Each structure stands twice: as structure tokens, then as C-alpha cells.
Image (cartoon, rainbow, N blue to C red; front, top):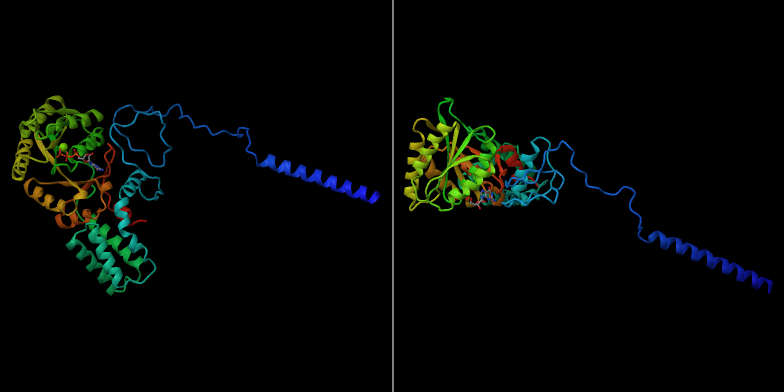
Length: 397
Ligand SMILES: Nc1nc2c(ncn2[C@@H]2O[C@H](COP(=O)(O)OP(=O)(O)OP(=O)(O)O)[C@@H](O)[C@H]2O)c(=O)[nH]1
Ligand SMILES: [Mg+2]
């Protein structure tokens, strides 16, 4: 009996102990209702930080910056999304990041070759390289030239693995892109004579991004120059209005004419007004389409002649090319170059193109410097063309 009582007592004590442990565990598993000791508070900007600009100019998100406060007004023009990314040290952060992100589609082109890393170069590697360069729109003759150079390196024992081939390709592309004088020159030329009004003409076929590029340039150059924009596209009814919106965004002055009017007269008028008002540069938009192509080229020649009349002097003729049109762009460029002395190329829509290689073709076949690249529709989406950053973006992971 005593033994039975003792056993019962032990069992009872065990049950009590187990219940206590289970209860304690449950309470630990339950989510705490207490506030965390250091609640997450979004830091207020320091008192001396600049106020948010309320202009309708779309500002692209700064790379690496914290997310913008949700209370800001949405930009009137859509801003290309910038994905978060790792940024290399050796280049200015904004530029490198933008180019890399924007070339996302072209970058995928070299993925197959990168997968062969560590392996010896064989016939298949060469075929892959050729196909990749052609797909990137480097063009037949430029691709042949690049392949020829790399095969010579193979014969000389300088290339063994795909890694060697890719680094030789990088070197070759950088050298090719850097070889044209004026490449990436982002300081636009002006007359040394202070009495003159420098004229920058922006030309190109319809829809390539001329007016948008002028808007971006006005924003860039507005700090350095007293710009006067000239709405020399009188063919498209909405063109003047479109330029006027860009002028507002960068607080630039604008000269507009009647729809269907004479574009040369508008540019002439802009130069006279610039002289009278103390502007030093006229940035002139032109039509991308007239009733026939021959007329367009003739019209541009006339605009150029008129713009060159004293006190005007044409110091830049920027040919805008849409990267998404690939090899067609080359044919256009040839036509424009023969008509108006082009001083540089602005290659737009690289963000939407999977064929960034057209830059190589342009420089190889036309020997015209690519000065700027357009990498989005926002006001800041125009950057100086930088061969090293560009090639790295093209070939990188
Ligand atoms: N994604 C992207 N779009 C661009 C870029 N540049 C221009 N665009 C867009 O391309 C379209 C045509 O641009 P416009 O500036 O009107 O072209 P345009 O050459 O002046 O055209 P026309 O006046 O008709 O000859 C617009 O929707 C622009 O927003 C760029 O770098 N990237
Ligand atoms: Mg236009």
C-alpha cells in the first residue's frame, strides 16, 4: 500500500512538471505583442537637404539611394526602371550603373559564351562568337574584322580558353570604340568668337528620339549655356508643343513657328533672337519626315546654310539614331553624313534594344564618333558614351 502511494505521488509530480514545461514552451512560441525595443522609423532627411523639386521633369531614381518618399508627385513622363545592382569601383557610379542596367537585353547575348568559360576554344566557340556578334548587330564586315583579329591571337598562342577569348574580345571592342576622334566627347562645341551664336542642329529620321534628346540636352547644357530652343520641326503638328514641354522642364527659352511653316526661317529667327536676348547657343530641332526623303535631306542642307549665316555658326550637327533599328541605322547615317556634316551620333533607345553592338558597326563603318547614348525616356537618361563602361556592360554577367 505504502509502495503504491509512493508510486502515485511520483507519477503526479511528473505530470505537473511536464505540464509546466509545455506551457512555458507554448508561451515562447506565441508571437510577442510587445513593440520591438528599437522600432523601425524612416529617417527624416537632414534639415539642410535640398527640398524635393516639384517641377514636372522626371528624375530617374538615384542608384543606391533609399527609396523615394511615396508622397512625391508622379513624374509626367514614365521613367525607365532601374534595377538594384552591384556597382564597380572604377567608374562614376551613376553612369556605370545606368549603362549596365539599360543594356540588360544586350547583355544576355553573351551568356552562352560565358557558360563555356574555363573550356578550350574550339570550332563551336568560334561559331557561337560569330553568331553572337551578328545577333548583337555588330554587322557582317565588323564581325569579320573582329574574328580575324582574335583568330590571329589564337594562332600566336595568346588565346587558349574561352576566358582568354572573351578578354581579347573586350580589348578589341574597347580599342575599336575608342579609336574614332571625339568619341564620348560630351562637351558640345561653341564658337570661340563671343559675337557669334553657336547653333547645334539635331537631325535624324522620324521617331528616332530627336526631340527627346533635345529635351535631355537642354537639361544638361542649361547650366553651361543660355540656350534658345528652335522648333524647326514644322511638319508634325504636335512637334512644337512637345518641344515646348521639354523647354519648360529645363526652363529654356523657345522659338516656335506656324505648323507647316518654313523650318529654315524659324532657325534664322531663333539666331536673331538669340543675338538680341544674349543667348549663346541655339539648339534646333528638325523634322524627321517630310513629303519625301529627298526633300528632307534638301531641307536639312538649307537649314544648315541658313543657320550658318552671321551671327549664327553651326558648331554641332548631331545625328540621332535609334539603336532598335539596327543595321538600318547605318544606311540612314550614311545618307545624312553626305548631306550635312555630322559631328557626332546620339544613339537612342539602347535601353530597349537587344543589339547594342550597332555602336561598334557605326564607329567601324562610318568613323563617326558616338557622343551620347539615350538609355531611357527621362530627362536624365542621356549619358556620354564611354567605351569601357559600354563594353563591360555588354559583356558582363
Ligand atoms: N526607351 C527609350 N525611348 C526613347 C529614347 N529616346 C526617345 N525615346 C522615345 O522615342 C519616341 C520618339 O521620340 P521623339 O523624341 O518624339 O522622336 P523624334 O525623332 O523627335 O520624332 P519625330 O519628331 O516624329 O521625327 C518617344 O516615345 C520617346 O519617349 C531612349 O533613349 N529610350
Ligand atoms: Mg521630334
